[in-house]
Amino acid sequence: MYKLSFLFILFAAAAAFGQETSGKTASEKQTSINSTNSLLPSKRSYDAGANMVLLSAEKTPEEFYSFKPTTTMATFAEILGAVADWNYRNCSGVLGDKNEHARVQGVKTSKTELLTALKDAIAYCDKAYEGMTEASAFQTATFSSPMGPLPMAKHQLLNVNIGLNSVHYGNLMVYMWIKNITPPNSDPAVWKKAAEKP
Image 1 (tube, rainbow, N blue to C red):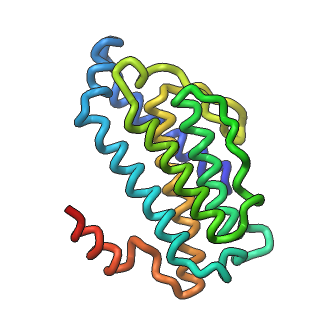
Image 2 (tube, rainbow, N blue to C red):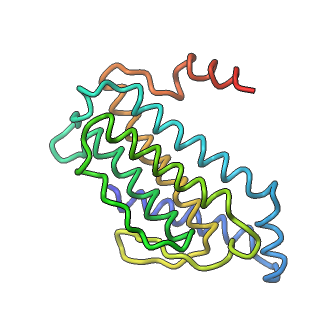
C-alpha cells in the first residue's frame, strides 16, 4: 500500500517537473522555478498539509493513539511518527544536512512526545522551504524511497514531501472518522479560526 502511494507521488512530481521545464534552457528553468511567487504555493501547500496533521494530533485523545483499524495497519501514533521521520529525512536532503535526528515512529508513543516531535520536524522543514533559492532549486538531492535512493531536484523533493504529508493525513482522517472525531479540514471551528487570523 505504501509503495503504491510513493509511486503515485513520484509519478505526479515527475510529470509536473516535465511540464514545467520542457523546452526551456537551464537559465530559464531556474528563473521560472525560483521567483518568489512561484515558490509560495509550495510553501503554502506544505504549511496547510503539515498543519492538518498537527491539528489531528492535537484533536485526537491520547487513548486513541494506539488505535489501528486492523492488525496489519499502523497505529495512529505510528502514522504521526512517520510524518516526523519523513519530514526530517526529506528536508535534511534539501538542506544538505546529515540526517542525525532520532527515529520517531515506533519509539515515541505518547501524545506529548509526538506533538513535540511533529512541531520540531515542521520547524526544521520550514527552513528548507523558506531557504529555496534560484541557485539551489535545481541542485540534486536524494529521496530515500522504499525502492532505494532516488536522485531528484531539490524543489521536486519538497513537493514529494508535501505529497507524503497529504497521504498520511488521509490515513489520519480515516482513523478519526472511525472514532467519531471530525478531522480538521471538515471542522467548521477550524475554518472559522483560520479566517480570523490576520
